[in-house]
Image (cartoon, rainbow, N blue to C red):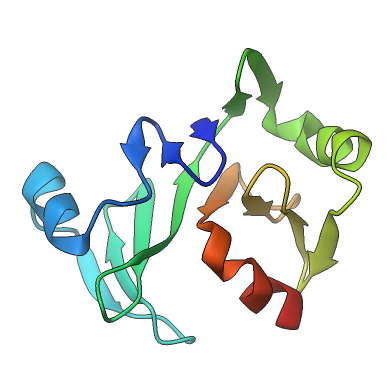
Length: 127
């Protein structure tokens, strides 16, 4: 995963709309609402989550590494990296959440990392 926090994920900007993702990637393997009411476009190894208005909230993908600028962090070292470099990090519902890096992940999962839009951090804090 190449992450420019709150700006882009794998060079796809957080300003992308649901319709633009559909034009880029076609029909997803699955589409529906998740338990918090976000629209999910599930492409297997990548899941895009949007508000019903079409505004992007999160992008979750399988990432053996996360590239933050010039640094490439292996998934297994991500928790330690976040703890060392983000004093504002917190944990919710089993997820490590990094406001500085704009990401959330379950360190026990199989390399799934979620890139967050800046406007959804408060929702994570409220969990």
